[in-house]
Image 1 (cartoon, one colour):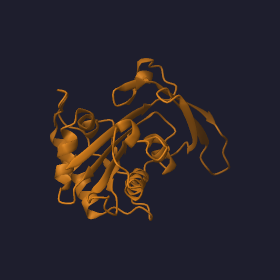
Image 2: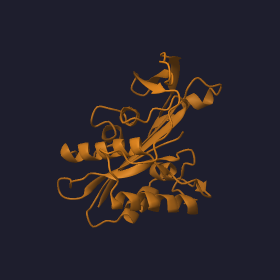
Image 3: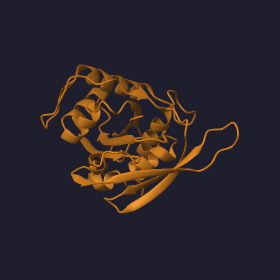
Image 4: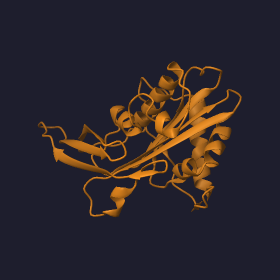
Length: 232
C-alpha cells in the first residue's frame, strides 16, 4: 500500500518574464510567487547577504530569508543528516529513470533529463520532514494539508535547512508512505504513475536534491518518504 502527495513551487526573482510569475502551483491551484531582493550588507572578506522576500498568492503569506550571494549547492552529507543505503538506491533509481526518459500519465513525453545531484541541505530538509511525519503519527489526507502539516511550506523547510540561493529557483516536493516490504523501485514507479509526481521526477530544471525516509516506522508499519529537489 502506498499513499502519495506532491507539491511544486516556482519562485522567481524580478525577471522580465511576466508569464513566469504565474507558475507557482499547489497541485491544481495556480497562483503567483514573486521574489525580490535587497543587499543586506556584508563584512570584509565575506560574501554579501541578500534578503529574499517571497509572496505566496495561494495562502497570501510572505516570508524572508537571508542568502549569501556566493551560495553554491552542497554535494556532501551534513553530519546531522546522513544518507542511508536505501536512500542512495532510491536516488540512483530516480536518476536511471531520468536518463531513460518516459511518458507521464498526462501525456507529457520526456526524452531524458540530467541526473539529480545529491545536495546536503535538501537531504536534511527531506529527512527532517519525514521524521516529523513519523513522530507526529501523521495520517496523510490531502496534498494541501500533507505538505504543510508542520505549519511550514516546503520552500520554507528547504531554505531553513540551508538551501538558500540568491537567485531564481524552482523547488518541488513529493511525499509517500509505503509498506516495509515495498522497494525503492516500487516507490519511484508509484510516483511515476501520478501525473504531478511524474513531471517532478523528469523535470530537467530540478538538478539538485535527495530522497529520504523516516528513520522509524509509521503507525501501522511502513516508512514516510520525502523527495526534495530544486534548481540552481
